[in-house]
Structures are given as C-alpha cells and as structure tokens.
Length: 87
Length: 440
Image (spheres, rainbow over the protein chains, first blue to last red):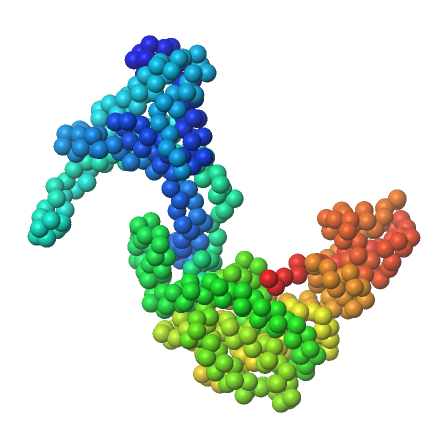
C-alpha cells in the first residue's frame, strides 16, 4: 500500500492505524461509516436472546450487544457476482 | 446514529501532516487496495478491523418473486465482513459489562426461558436440534422474541409465551413473595412442630431461595393466567394432606407458603406434564430417602426466631408440598426433576444444610440485633484464632472476615462486647458466615 500512496511504509502503517481508530470512534458513537464504492459499516444492536448450550444443554442468556455490520456497495457486489472472483 | 463519510475519516489523517485532498486520497486508496486484494486473494485481513471474505453461495431453487414460478437462482459470490476481536469490543463498549449467564429456570423471555424441564434425557436432542434455529431466528427477527422459544419444545414455548407477557407480573410476584415473608414470620413457630418434613418442600423452596438472586426476574417464571387457577387448585389439594401436622398448622402455614411453593411447583409441572414418565421414577428415590433424613435432623425447637424469613419460608413451604398423594408428588417431583440430575443431590444436601445452619445462627440473632439484621447468617464455627499482642476485635474481624464492621459477628459469636478487653493468647471463635439471601 505504501508503494501506491507514495508514503513510506511506516508512515502508511501509522496512517492506517489512525484511520482505523477514527472508524472505531465513529462506531463507538454509533455512527455508521460509508465508503463510496466500497460499502457501509454499520453498528447494529442485537437483542438479548436465549440459547441452548449444545454441550451442556443448559439454557443461557446472551446479553444484548452491538455488532459491526458491513454492507457492500452495490457496484462492487454486482461485480463480484457476475465476475466471480477467483473463488 | 449518524453517518460518517470518507471525508470525516480523512480528517483524522490531517494531523499527520496531510492536507484534506491527500488525506482523502489516502483513504480512498486504502479501500481500493482492500478491494483489489480481495478480488485477488479471496480474503483480506486487517488487524484491528476485521476480515473481508468472498464467499461462494451455491445455486438454489426458489420462487421468482414476480411470476411466482419456481426458478433456479444460480450460485454466486458474495463479500462478507467479520469484525475482529478488538473491533468487536470497541463497538460493544456500551454493553461490555454484560455477560452470558446460565439459567436454571424462569420463563419470562426477557430473562431467560425455562431450562428443559424434567425430561433431560429426551430433551437433549431437542435443544441441540433447535439450536441452529435459535441462532438464526433471533438474528432474523428481533421483534418476535417468542420465536426462539418456539423452537424449543412446545411446553417451553407456551411457558415462554406466557412468561414474556408476564413481564409486568414479575413485580407482582415479588410483592407476593414479600407478603409471604412477612406472613411466614407469624406462621414460623408452627414450623418446628413438624417433626417430619420432607426434603422435597424445603428443597423446592431452597431452590427458589438459592436461585433467587440471579433468577428473580426469571423466577416470576411461569405464572401465566391459566396457571393461577392451577396454583390455587394445587395448593388446596396440598393443604389437604398434612403429614403429621396437626390440623391447626395448616391454616397458618399454607397461607404464607402458598405463593412460594405453589408458584414454583405448579409452574414446573406445567412443562413437566407432557413427559413426566422419565424423571419421576428417578425422583421418588432421591427425594424419599432425603425426606426421611431431614426429619430427625431438624429439631423442632430450633427455629423459634420469627425474624428469620429465610428459614421461615422453607418451613411453611415444606408442609404444603409434602403431601404424598401421588398426584401431588408429581408436581413436586417435577420441580425436583427440573433440576438437572447432577444438581439434585447437591440441592437436597444444601437444603438440609440450610436447615441446620439456620438453627445454629438463630441463637446469635436473638442475642444481637446487629447479627439479626446483618447481611450474613452465622452458620457454625469456621475456626478459632488466638489473639496476638496488640490486636483488637476490629483487626481480627478485618483479617478473618474481611471487614472490620463485621466485628459484631465476632462479638456475638463469642458472647463478648465489641470493646471487651481481649488479651494476647485469648481464643476467639470465628463464625462461619453465609450470605443471607435477599428476597428482591
């Protein structure tokens, strides 16, 4: 990546980290992050639910939580669909 | 939840000395690289963010939404993203204090559904089979909270349905419980009269007592409307069969104990009823011998203290569900069977121990009001320590019990005043303390 951008590797790394931190901050706030041509990162809340632990068979309560969700942009999604990246 | 764009992300990069244009370009490049890498490699892992993967989806048959005729949807690829651990935690920060908990009973959905009732053997397959469904449905539909329950046995689902609606009822149940506690104080002195009391009842109540702290909301449990009449029914029937208690005990006891044992007991039979066969044969065995045991060990006069709500509850509760009528045994056994077989012996032993412990602690409670109102119950002697030079009771309390405020337990247990002049070499008995279960 650094070769692409023209910055040094270290610098790039640092910037990447910054970027990620910036994104996380958004998520903490609850904001979603949209990247054109790429997709959208969203924060969604999941309700608490009851599950059965398959090993023990005991019922467990999973607390509500926030999860990060990524929705691919349509352009890219179609490209993948039709093109079929070497899978 | 607002939306943030690349621009804003790029802002952060400015502090590295880039201007707006460069920063934006960088961000764009970054994502482009991710995209290309993914096209090339099928998987891109970004530390601190997550993993992007291209997943192939197989061809499947489906119905054309427009025409309604069956068509084949060809297989294709799709891009998935899985946040990595760091990112997950960051995102979940507001909810980080929660944790997954195991539930024994309780039906209201907002706390947990009932654990598989008595039928542990048959049930084993069911929950696991249902499990995949569970994971899918909750994710798919958050609103219909009852869907997961439906994947369980119908019994549970019924109960959960009820439980879910019962949410508001939980407080009613709590009110009932408090009422019971208050009333049980009055009936308490009847308690010692029962020479022979089953473990079953105390064990039922001991269960409720024990699980209450974490299960309180859940404990309100299966109290659907249709069960209330059942409860009344069961109670009256139970009342009819006093073991050896004189008739006069009945009126006092059943009253306070009614909500208590009736609630867990009849509610448990609900789920248990459809498949009572298996657990029952097992239950009579452990329950019966256990019931014989506590009888002698529970000396009547040892529970005079009306102020002891905890023991008071098992007391009156014991009498009612005790009844040997086979039909009544069923609900009781269902309840007992409700606990996983592994738990059964422990609970019974615990129940017995509870009785004994209470008897020990009572005398101290009588002597010292601080012990009576304290958060702990004295359940015996833990050990004996010798006073060292220059020590005070507070210091000993802090060292042995964890807190110098607990000196009241020390003085009460040793029969001395807080400021008694203890001397070097004196033997101080350290009581064994048990957290007094709060009924909330």
